[in-house]
Image 1 (cartoon, rainbow, N blue to C red):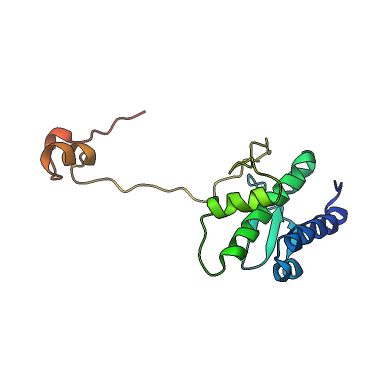
Image 2 (spheres, helix red, strand yellow):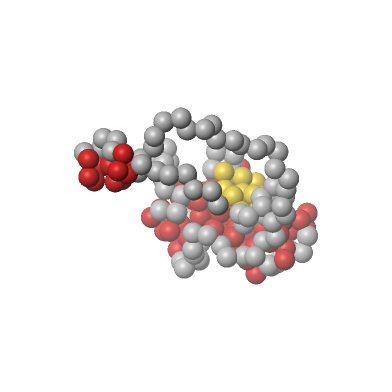
Length: 161
């Protein structure tokens, strides 16, 4: 598998296009682009059918065996939507699972378990909740025991941690 972003991108793009052509998606194969996107932090990859773009996380270079699998995972999203036409498909639904089988990753899971490094970033904003001026009660309890109307018996109490 590829060892660097520029060398690897051409190989990955060629692989992706060959897989799409093998499954009758010639038009998408011509338009498809593959890129490495450093803005992906915890996701291994991302597929955008409208842009005909597959974005891969550069941290995959630390897990070379996962590059091809991630490419096929994202390619399955593109292929599933291509086959569905204008109909919207569930991201990891039956159409996607069928595309995974066709692309040789029948046992594919919805999420990866790769240990990606995530750096802590300083928070830009601090959110503050306004003080609640009226009584608040447990909705589930009020629904179950008082027909959904407020009941002081189920009033919530503020507890400091």
